[in-house]
Amino acid sequence: MEVYCHLRSGDQEDLRLIPKIAQTAEELGFDGISFSELAHDPFFPSIMAIEHTEKIRVATSIAIAFARSPMLSAYMAWDLQKMSDGRFELGLGTQVKGHNERRFSVPWYAPAPRMKEYVESIKSIWDCWQNGAELNYQGKHYSIDLMTPEFNPGKLDCDMPTISIAAVGPVMSKVAGSVCDGIILHSFNNNRYVEEVVLPNVEIGAKSNGRTMDDISIVAGGMIATGGDEEEVMLQREVCRKRISFYGSTRSYKSVMDMHEWGDTCLELHEMSKQGKWQEMPSLINESILDTFSVSGAYKDIGPALKERYGAYSSRISLGFPSDESSHSDLANLLRYLHE
Image 1 (cartoon, rainbow, N blue to C red):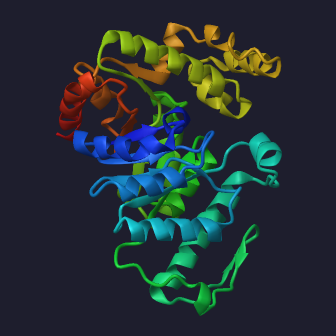
Image 2 (cartoon, rainbow, N blue to C red):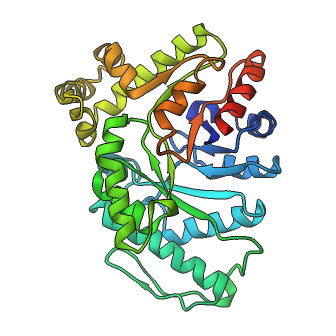
């Protein structure tokens, strides 16, 4: 099992710290480091991490797709892959309708067919640059057929970047299986939903394009509350409780909560969010919900629980950056255990 150090928005507040964080992640034994797009763009810290490391892979997890042209994403990933000598991974996601329309001011269409075209068009662009293929992608949402020598960055001396997409529902899971190198499961997830909804649909998508599950990397979902001691674990559990209440207020994620008959909680959270009761919403997340959506334990203890929870299906999991240097030894031991 591979383990990436995942930096969320708060970890990226001071970009001047990114080089040291990336170097420390490499020294501790992480396989990669990934950057999210919440309050900050994920590509800029990716550049900094690549520049200051030598071995670990660097990924966006995720970058918002529809707010960017496929051509822009293709260029950015290409340059980062060249800069890193083949260590960059492009992770994409759709975001929900409200954010696309009201935050990014881009039109909203059915996301799964659009994402399929987005990935296909990027691969067509890369095929043009790497292999000299004619660029002529024609889809319902994207039409790309112009590439003059002046704008062609030329071949890479390494493999082309991989593309993974974030997926929650069955249709997007099929898209991941059909055209992507990997699927990034949402942190708002539980094992039953993964086993009964996500994985079967990834396999259906893979078979539809002559592929197997072995062709697709699976980045585990769910939340992990861990740290160097029990005090830190309890603090992280409350962070998870807050995140579950936030994601649980999204009606399009109701099907995830329905797996455990918590759909009414989703609807109640949604109503509270409309009233701006963000600070009160975590109170609806009881211990049963919390433990279903997360795994908890100190670095020195959590290893077996992580293997039990994710070992059957995931290619990799993600852990946050350690807040206390005194816990680095325990974390390094955990990483070695998970690599076994």
